[in-house]
Length: 188
Image (cartoon, rainbow, N blue to C red):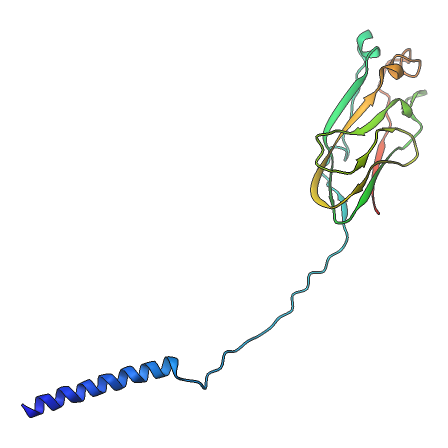
């Protein structure tokens, strides 16, 4: 019986030594040090002012149809949602100008100043804005805009009744009169 008690005691000692060894391996080894590596992350930013190619003004058309006396004797407004979709990283001004002095139809013409362009209140771009009577000079349509990504600028194109019922439009030969308008976003 002495042999079996010794054998059990010996096995207990081995088990205790094994447990101590395992704990020592995981928790007591002070020779292993934590290792670190450091890397530098650089964010290289460039200023950007971009008019999205999906903007309605990019190759789009705004049509005013004068079909009857009511059309010539009333103000006409065309609202164009997403006229411009702009991404910008710093404050800017948006300017507008006509590429010529007249809407043209062959040798017939209508002065571009019959048209007013203004910011529609549904736009997501905020800034100082005033209606612009179209001319060949760059005119500020909206100014002091901060920064933002893919913000929409909805525009209203207006021909007032006093211009459509005047000789500027009324009495001109029928047909389509055309002129291009250019928008320019410039950093402040």
